[in-house]
Length: 169
Image (cartoon, rainbow, N blue to C red; front, side, top):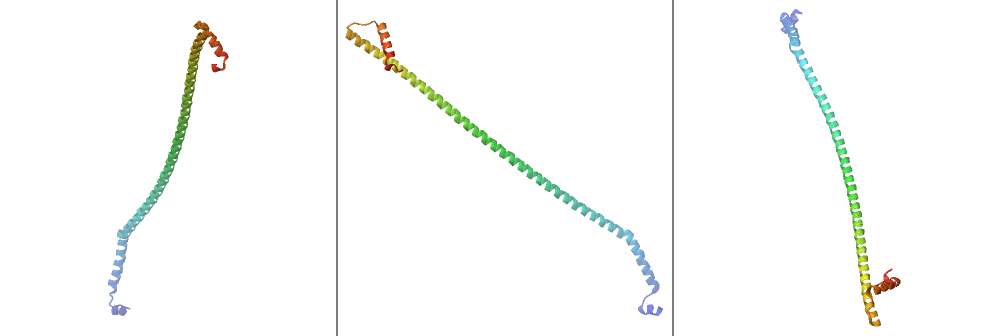
């Protein structure tokens, strides 16, 4: 075997020293570099997982906030529709009240007009009675040839007019 090792050009003590150096270097690297690198990779992996969790939580919170905003918008729309409906009811009520007030005012004006017409009619009838009385007194005076007492004559005319259909009754 010595010849085989020397034929290959290997130096056995040097090979054993290199293998020993390799294992020593491997142990030193394991404790000095490999564990810290694995630790650093684990920490990075944990930070990435935490970041993903935080992003998921933020996404869930954003979805909840969006749902809350939608609910508030819906509530606002419902309140606005209720206010519009209430305003329309108030407007309808005000229009109805205005119509009723206009009808009352029209009826009152009509009643006043009727009362004024009745007063004018009564005045015209009274005036006609007075003129008729004067005409009747003048005619009677001419017929009789004498002047009657005005008060007695007026009493007779009023009684006659009250009995007649001309009195407006």
